[in-house]
Length: 94
Ligand SMILES: [Zn+2]
Image 1 (cartoon, rainbow, N blue to C red):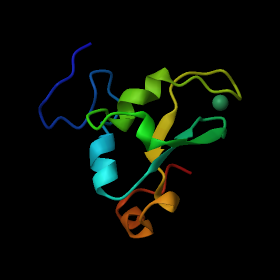
Image 2: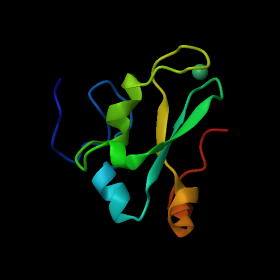
Image 3: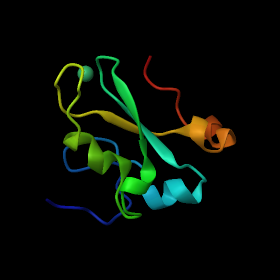
């Protein structure tokens, strides 16, 4: 699977490239939230993944326990980290 090392904003399949777990931890964030389009979501501990893995690298791997579809939206869990950082992020599509 090709992993472009440039400052490309998207993955090869067109999904937006998100920050790495290392960058997330540097921001003081300790967890991630995994959202499915059906509304199902789960909070996970960011310690499960290495620093050089991007949040968006994980998205195709998640299978929703609610509807069974693949391809969740993985976001930093700002509520468990520094809430000030959340101002920089987007509130989401809904
Ligand atoms: Zn679902």
